[in-house]
Amino acid sequence: MFLFRLLSLTDYLVLTQEGVLSLLMFVIFVVPNILKLTLPLSLLFASAIVVVRMSGDREAEAWMASGVSIYRFSRAPLVLGIFFATIAAASALVMEPYARQQWRKFKWMHARKGVESLLENRLREKTFVSDLFQGGGTKIALYVDRIDQGRAGFKGVFLGINGQAGQQGSQILTAESGQLIKDSESGSYDYLFELRNGRLHQPLSDGSWNVISFDKFKISLVNMFQKQFEIGQFDANDMRSFYPAEYVEELRQLRNRSDWGSNQRSVRDHTYFYEQIVVPLSCLFFPVIGVCLGLQDPRRRAGFAYLGLMAIIFVFYALIMFGQQMAVKFVLPPEVSLYLPMVSLFIMMIVVLFWRHRHPPSTNFSEFVGYEGSNALARFHRREG
Image (tube, rainbow, N blue to C red):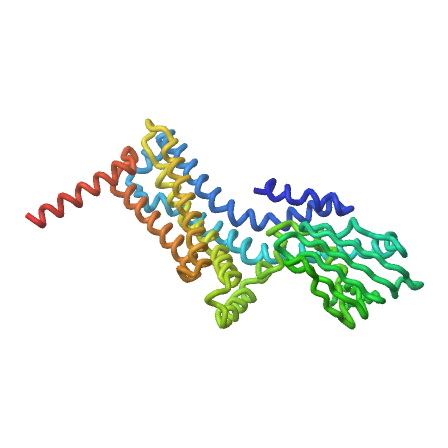
């Protein structure tokens, strides 16, 4: 998972001059997101592998022969699951928002250094600067006819934006004059490029141009320069950087909006927050399920146990994705992405616990289902008779 995210960082490491520091910050940024996903899976497989070894060494038989039930056998993994659920929840709800906030600050500082380097070394009169701001498929060209002393004022400004298809699109800004303003109102200073007495040219689908005149037009150079450091979905400037209290308050406001029933972005924000809760809580159920599947006859191979683990993982994450898609399409409420996986996982745990309590490790799950089904059918026939 980490290497998959690292591939998207290649361009960023090339663009920045502090490759090692950038890589370290990226590691800190992605680890909480990976940790919340890998802890439950690691716990599930760890509990199964330990019990498979105990079954192979006949230690599990000694426990069962001494009167230890599967319920008592599962106490220690359950306590371990509570501990890891706490870690995974802290990683998802606290560490991940903090890492996202720090990553955005780190990007902002790099972008500001890039703007300062541009203003000092590359911006010249009557010279096109066309190889900058190339993040996310967007290319920007800047031309200035005359620069005042001190680089505070400009004359004859041309700014061309060639946006990626389906996003902002192409735009051309021309202005008689411009001024560079150093803004520090937000606490982290920015460079604002204020264009005066200009026109904004936007192409239309029929081949013509829409021209809008303006007296003043402000552009954040740092924010624009920051786009070349974007790394896809991991750089989304959204609610994922909110702590739980802020997130819940924002969700409450989204539900009160008039477009709640048709705004997919709001529903996605809801389902993402529920995912941050569901995945860590799976640590409470996975170790018990792993113990029940790993406890088996030592004469049997462990392949079926691991196959069962993979099936459990597939069903769990498929239910999460199913709930999210149904919510985004407004078929089911967003809460279904929270309750459906948790209830299903709880039922799975109860079923496998009942299986191992009623039948010895020599019984496969398919045999248990057939046995219980035949008993239920026999009871039904006796009642009917």
